[in-house]
Image 1 (tube, rainbow over the protein chains, first blue to last red):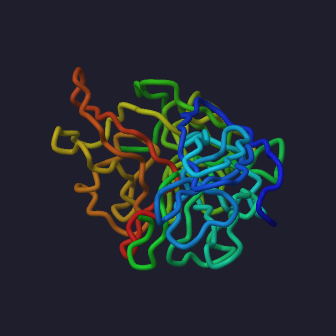
Image 2: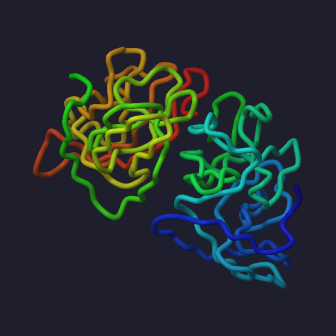
Length: 157
Length: 157
């Protein structure tokens, strides 16, 4: 897949916590984008995350940031139906992540699980798969887990 | 203790998120049973095996008759769980199902602290112990965390 070029809708359940975070610079944060904190300065970015970046939430509404520190609303918790790569019932319980050595983007469709690519240093945790959507088998229900990256020696940190 | 044979009491706070999950096969899921995903990804109760993940807490008693029947579970929230010998000193520890100890079940009274379990491969995380119930010291308040098992090499994965 590729970085988002339009808003996407992700169904969700339960209450969500919204947080305003500062953008790293001019960019379009599409609704439903996976938002990352840049390793260098902690500011929010979309498109292609790099080594050391961490997932911090899902963009609540489209925002066109024109400069650094413009605010972007994100959801930082909750149960989300995400259209990740080839979700299957057998994947329930697994961690889905962005493969930093592959083609990581802000598009949930690019999230994969350890059977798709071996976990490696600085891969970015998106969340744990808890069920396949009974109405749409291209989606799984995820509890998103923000702020975790993988370390070969000690696991998720 | 033993596998649940009746609904159980488990107070909770807040508004936990409910999710419908597909079951492994015919079984009775008692209210407030600990529900696990087996290695095929479907929901089961009774006795979890190595590699199974905690999915949530059964919301209402359901008698399933075939694989794929749906069971409602709570996948987040703060629950007063009657794990083994709760004590103030357990606050901050994990609450787990000790797979390596054998005989552990869907019954909350078979859960224990990480310290009591001596964590080993495949032990199943239930959640983090945040307080001992002020009115009933046989219970601890646990923020549940579905989807994590223990690796001796990597910690929680």
